[in-house]
Length: 141
Image (cartoon, rainbow, N blue to C red):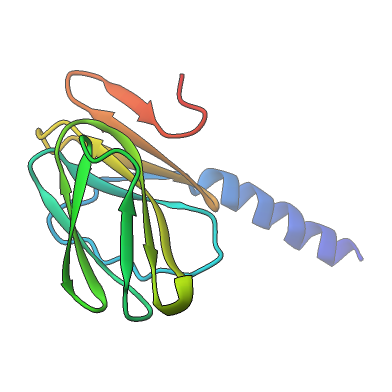
């Protein structure tokens, strides 16, 4: 029992200390979708494009705010997302019979390429950085 407590304490300490920042290139992002999961961020810079690979053939694509991002269907399993202006919008993709294939939050940052995603355990926070970093998405100040 004592050994188990020690292992749990070490794991908790290491997961809290493993927070790291990573700059993601937005010109070549591969996002394999998992239907039914919580929306994940898809970072893209304004004026740049990113692609998504879906788990099945797409039939319909919906963008929440088309002034922030636009989507083109390349083939039945690949979408290209174009960032238009900084902001956050949703992207939904559906297959045959209305089956959900993707539910993503598109985060468009300034075209300076200054985007950062900070990971703390399983939680990721996305920031758009120009002169200073601003948190994007839920819980942003």
